Image (tube, rainbow, N blue to C red):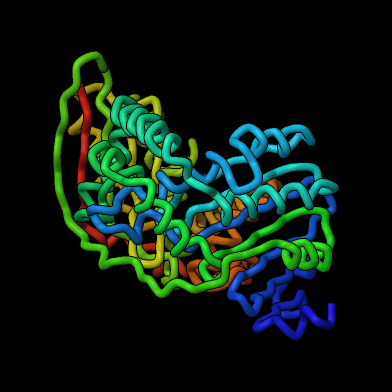
Length: 415
């Protein structure tokens, strides 16, 4: 270990954060390693590239997502079947996702098989070969995925409100368009992979019942392409738009309202979480109480947040009878505005609810591994352990101030 420590640029120990089980190291090659020790014999290994859909131009939209698919289509030493079989035969699960700011690959399995998880994830992440025949085949698969989102009224409404809040390319669907997907060549995708999937642009997050020194030794044994990437998210341009869409074969109007909200690096991101919780998260929220329980206008109505480095929005979704759409919109906007009068008691209850929800979510090693990476991308992973303190520090005035936002986008899909 002495030799390794000489090669470390930055090390954060448990003494630096309010969690005795957290460790963070940045290697000389730029790879950041995050680790939280758990007593439960299950481990999640997640490896993420700091490259997602938000980094793409209009012409590139969909590349990050396409690359995520192709990384599972064979490596220099594993076939498609061998990639999944090696994890599954020990009871593990392998998957990946594309986000606006990262593309992540993760394995969840018994902690005793950590070596398998790291070996497979690093192989998929750094050594994917992108066979030509798989590129052609997978482009068809992704086009079917795009159609699936479009055909699903709820999914389509969520994607459309984003388009009504932001100009292209950010406002476009993460998976891209069918035209883009069909137009990407194997070399174009492979070269982008080689550029983005390098040590200095990668974060390894591990949560489980393992030893940090063991993790370091295993990582040292991996062959990792060295390099760094100096790219930034292109300017995200806001817009406000109201639009309606009609479709045969459906009987309910899917309705979404969108509001521009604080970014993930803003101090009042925590106020945004409390605002959203009080307004529309759960059956005890203001919107659910008013729209469903009192008025009987919808089966489901809820709010959600998506906050990134250069963007932030809260959306409100409801499914209702076409004749009642205007009524739901009016009530929702009134309830949003009434958040200027949110009470101390509501603030107190929401803080307990949010902190409790975080504890419940963090029971899963996979959820914590993702959260640690997202905090690292936004600032530093250590902030994950300051969450309760930051939520409790939010003032009533900070929550009420968000209700001053008046501009909003609307999208509805109905029969």
